[in-house]
Amino acid sequence: MANPDPVRDAVKALKQRKQELAAETKRVDQALNALLGLTDQDGRAAASPRPKGSPSVRTMLLNLLREDISRDWSVNEILAEYEERGTPIHGAKPENSLRAAIADSNKSGQIVRTDAGRYRAANSDDPVRAEGGGG
Image (cartoon, rainbow, N blue to C red; front, side, top):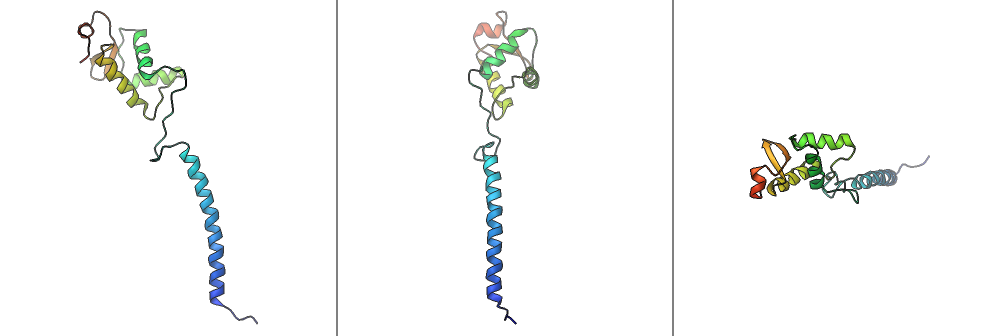
């Protein structure tokens, strides 16, 4: 009858556990690498870059608002319209990109704020445009 050796048994068990953990670590690394391809260094969703040759957010905004200069739009309506058209605004946070484009376009007098959070394309009759800036 073999004499039990607790140290040898413990070493054998630890080596087996080490192999199991190595396999699990490999699976975790693969999952992590897959996610890192979709996120930035901080784990946030990575920006979806603007497709080459597509217009900037500001150009998209101005084109939409100029289609009907009598209509005013909210940020959510603009985002929804471009989603519906199949040409969504790109970026990590499309709403923030759109708000920045609105601010720039309003400041330059290309669009006018009609009410809180609502904007339309400027026209030559707008006093803000005649002064060369937005408010």
